[in-house]
View (cartoon, rainbow, N blue to C red):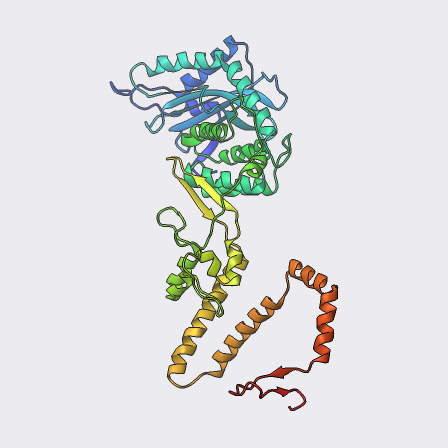
Length: 436
């Protein structure tokens, strides 16, 4: 909790000096709000089980939370909360919601059950009227929250998915401070409370965030709570539509085949791919161009994939694609590149650099032994890899060796001596292996 925020009593808030009322500013006192709330709760038949008050060091901004004696659900009781200020930094707000028994946090509606009033004109009279309206409809708002809670229990969330939502709440919506984000992360790893439904559910994650919200400033606390519920409701459709686990949804998504090394791959502006970054660092743009094996030539009409090195073909296989849509509606996609693919690309660059070095040194009439040995090592590795038969090739060879034709060929080779032509113009000049 921030140093300037502290828990106080009703008497402390009543004693805070009131600001001067002007023609453009109507004072809504903390004391009047508390009196109105107590009176109306009693009129509607609600009793107060507990009350909590927090405020800034001078009491200029304050909030009150009341746990009520109504709970048709054993996990959550009805609650009422308000926020008020004397320094014009916060409009008066009041809301009804749920008080979670497990961790003593609050659950507020995202769209309904809230009202705020600027401190002008008849603000004090309007505040009284809206407090009455909120408490009159409190059970309806409470029942809606109970329904949302039950839906959230049925939605499974992996740790990765929870981390993604945490990142959105922290970086995009700015509902969490760095300290609060750390609290949520710690709760994900080792929850301080038990929540029905299990650790890896939306309901558990929701409570991790509300636990962190206990550190919020009274100025932003209520709005942070409402924005959280609004975001979760829209992200997971808690309005009554059939709910499907994000894990199941992920299994039903078929990503298109993409080439993560394609320099023409449709990426968002200001983004680049792996080889482009490597080319910028090394200054070698040759890595952006498909290269041929030594025994292969380019033919017209042949696609780039057909002439790439064998080790580069591995990278053309379909990879997982991360997709993200920002609030404006722009969709971004980026392929996931493994460590193996990075190592292959780096090896390709090193081999290209060796060849260029050899060409340069060869022109000077000298060839460093260490450069040649490194290149020989690359070539030996490629030759060894190419000699490994695939399972299909091994099967073909096995079938061939067990045919009568194969045995005839072996016997014929044993009877006929090996002959070769030394390049003589006379076609009759031939030598057998006995001559050597």
